[in-house]
Image (tube, rainbow, N blue to C red; front, side, top):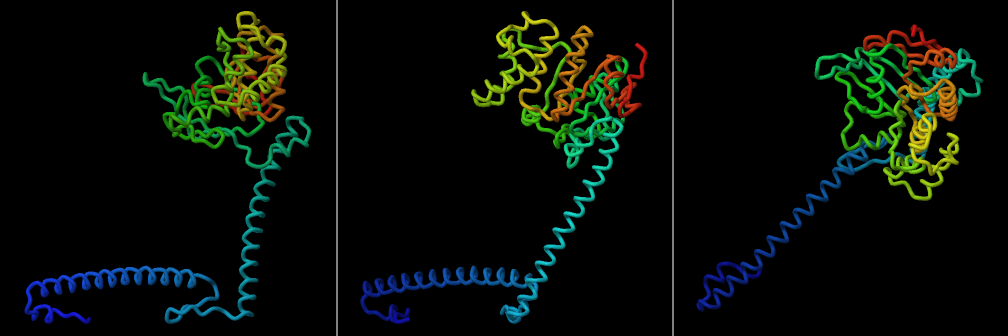
Length: 360
């Protein structure tokens, strides 16, 4: 450096010496800052080189010698590329074969189930793949007063199934149904609906899960000051669907349940069967994957009940899973579906095309 401390100390003029020292300090500070910046940059470059070296070292066919990457020759590179592509092809083929084996296994089960149901085999295409909609594993439910409503429940319900839940009063049917749409939570065990773990679901996510679950109650639960159209449309308004979509879809489902001509009627102006049809329209307006029906024909006469059941069967045929609690022996024994029989909080019978099995 051209300026030294000795020259600054030996200056005869104190003022000049001070200026010289200040100039020296500024240069030293500038030089030190530059050196520090250069050292930092060098460190970053070294880190980048090390990262690149690690990345290169992981590449097959590349060797690292004295921090220099030795790449393969063109011939070896072609051979290496070919081996990599073969490995990828084998991995993909292996995954496809595993998936095909799983589907074939599922398909064989579904073909057997369909043959027992007497349904055409062309429906197998709907049932194959990822079909599980509801899963319950070791479910227990004990209320605060000590009453055990459910114990050791294990059940799997697939897509497009129609399942009756039967049993005497107090057997646990209502609690079983409430668990599906998260009205209740299990004390023990795991329940999954449409891929969601219902037991561990956060409170803010419950409305989003319920959008894909339709619920039909025995007492209809319609809003008395709203028309049939408004009761059905309200289910779409709460999820902020576009107005055009609400109008089109609401009229579609009212037409499906046979009440398009009574869209403007209040619940008090409708019969019990018509009110239940409105409740069904409200349950299916958002195209749910699952419908939970808690004794939907309990307050209806036999003729009206059969009309409701035919409507539910049509909805099921369109691809919706239906879980229905009922005490109607005639319906269960005539429309042979899967039957879950409950006693004292446990499932004691699970039959395809089962019967009611209890005397009324």
